[in-house]
Length: 498
Image 1: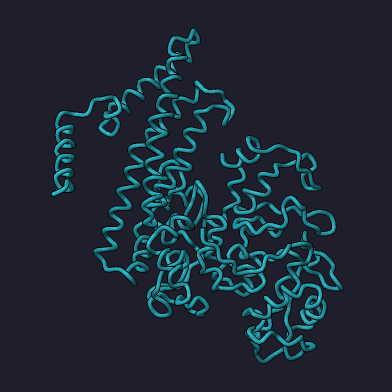
Image 2 (image 1 turned 90 degrees about the horizontal axis):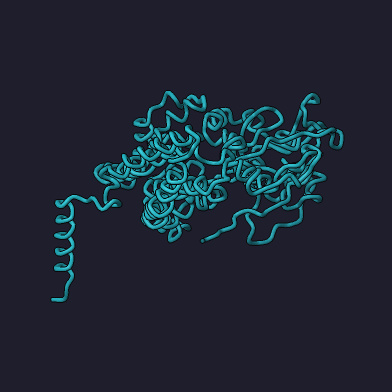
């Protein structure tokens, strides 16, 4: 996997978030920058007295962060440490620091003082709700199946799973716990998870994409930024992007992308390739920037069966419930049309919808119905049955890969990592496990179990007799067999040596 590191990793310990503010006209002069280093942006005006005090100390204590801030737009606008970190004495995470009342965490609520529109959009998005996974089936795996309660902290005296702390919470966000004196519990901080629950009640972390302290738009536009979370067996968008023609074009032309452009409009500031941001966030000649990444998505492929995004928004109580998928698709088509013609874009969506329908109709919907009927015959503890893992990976890993692969034009992820894996495990593991479950319970002296087994058998018979699955039972029609035989003969004739 290609990796391009754009930012210096810095431990977020205590007030590491506060430290680094470069010199300007009213500060003591810094050491000369190396010849190859661009000089910090400077504008007329002065820092606030509070931030000037911070700078005087932190440019020595945390020089790397100080340098990052010096290259930021915040620096040029005289936005310093205190403007972002200031806190009221009544804030639960407020601490006294060299005579100032500050908080370590800068939350979306803080950012909204200067960026209200961006925060409003972000707060309406699925990104800001990422921490809601902490009560989901996924988190049962990290908390219980994979983990234990050996990780103890002041906020978790009875223990918490280190797998969840270091895994799930770092992408989805933790509920940050504040200890006495405004200190932050080490199980929940440091954390830049996209849906972090902050002490002030706000949801989300702007630094998940705009890493402190440069808060670089260019970095947020770079695909690897999204790859921190959008990668792996269940949502490999980063890998799919790299496989796609879009990703290939980007890595071949990264130096032509003009990522530092203030407005960065596709077709005006760059045309070499799209990035994740191009399609989901950034401006076009007809659309402004949006921080609600769901406003250009016409399928939600996260569930076991894909649904339209307004359906999932309604379930989460988001305002997007009133924005239908056709409007969102129109927004995305507007992006596509900057590089492709209408016929190309329309045909892509026909292909994509076809794959989603194939998965939903052939595997997702019947597979889910079979699993529901199998539940009364299983051990009641989640993931204590092999069938639990089999079905979970079919939809959560393989089914998602197939659908995401089609959405981003990654053929290998659509097929070999996607539909092939779905089909292989559906027919070689899932169906046999269900059949075994029926055989072990159909004659049970427990009337309830016998009835449940019979209901499962009836549904199995119905599914396997359908046109999608009858091949498995050796029931392909003579017409279909002849059609396939003829196609094979035509293939051989086409490619046999002349």
